[in-house]
Image (cartoon, rainbow, N blue to C red):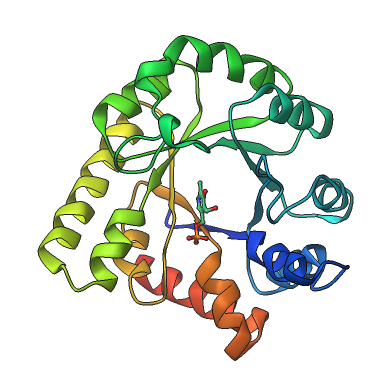
Length: 247
Ligand code: PXP
């Protein structure tokens, strides 16, 4: 199994800071360029229905300026599908946006919506986008993601990170065990396995050490640390920790 673990840097919260004032800065495209220099393998951006951070113009500018692959996170709506089909990013990650689309663990409820999602992702795949589904580490959801034709699943690490941050170490370890078991299960089904949400310097390494994972998507913490360290140093440190966990 290859030892390489890709880092996708999520730049949404650069846009959050920009939008707090309006105007043009800080610029998410500039952040993406710095991320590339700091060792990111891809850029992730979530165009939310309410455009609370990333805007349509950001997606356009990223598609134009990026040399790294763009992982376009979006809800399974007609509007977002049309935008994805217009830009044809390298990857599309389908995420829940409304409460009723979520499982209790926070991933997309694929199992209940299999038919609709199968039809939803088919044109994206035909357009050449790699389709990923953001789900809880749950066997039912993984099987459903596989059946609808997704090539990638991204396992939700939020509950693991929260349990770590709040000192609930038994729960954290149980959650890590579940993610490990489901990463193996998904890999054996032939799915590419990613993970993300809530990862920090403190909790990334046990996740990064899971051999089936090929990509982590990390955003909020990196942008927060950038306030203290600068963005390049913030990302480099995450990269170093991930590589050390794999070594
Ligand atoms: N992966 C997915 C699918 C996400 O929706 C997000 C949050 O936008 C992330 C990863 C990154 O999470 P965080 O910003 O907490 O690192």
